[in-house]
Image 1 (cartoon, rainbow, N blue to C red):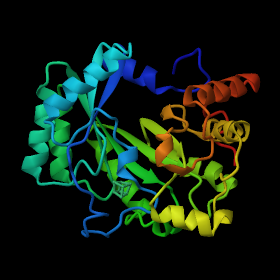
Image 2 (cartoon, rainbow, N blue to C red; image 1 turned 45 degrees about the vertical axis):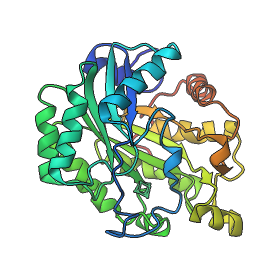
Image 3 (cartoon, rainbow, N blue to C red; image 1 turned 45 degrees about the horizontal axis):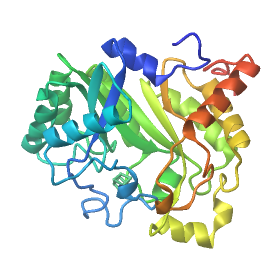
Image 4 (cartoon, helix red, strand yellow; image 1 turned 90 degrees about the horizontal axis):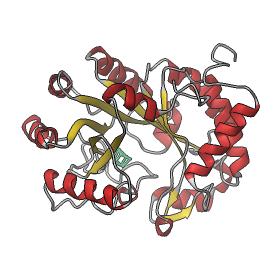
Length: 313
Ligand code: SF4
């Protein structure tokens, strides 16, 4: 843990793994999603809008190599230099294709001379021993992590938002990944329908059981044209974060951080989607770095640190 911060931050984890500043380069490999193409369901998760994931430099008509070059130039032109670049397969379900196709995608990314590793974003029910073996093989000489979209530990919620998988799938996928010495991360959404603030805090104990190396929290954002936009309009009372202020969100995150295992690095406390895509977002207009600073300051004010309430209920 970075001892100047009251939590284990992701930047420290990456510096520890790779020995320098790391920049992720998002890739859109044009892979589908089983929750959209009918294998599991049509329509996808009720909150999902794929455009919200992809940075402007990701174009599916470009090769992986071209996307990496554009991504590096994009970050350099904004003054973000790095010692290491990681190819981040972000959009869609990046383990959902034939083994040969996936291998060729991962191989192309890892062969790029400026790429030091891979992060593969996927669903917990979309992983197999064969895919894990390919990634474990790459992990013998390059950095590899798998980032699972888990979103909630509550099966009722997962069903409500049409995720198409259960929390048991997440337990299995994270265990199989850890067993191969691949870093494992997860993404959770705070504020899904019918989840209370207390539940959001209490689920942290369950999250700890997954043994994650890193975690991302996002506040629920409601995108235009999604089924969730309709639900939010009809039943706003189901959404506990609807009118939360930045201060209240910081207090919520402080309680979560204090219960989170200190070995799990925190990559995000919240996210910021392009404004034109949003019907509603708690924290709209609040900069994510300002929010991170608020959470940090509040933890310090309380003399609190990540995990200091780990065993308390
Ligand atoms: S959130 Fe992920 S799993 Fe759900 S529909 Fe979107 S791409 Fe598919």
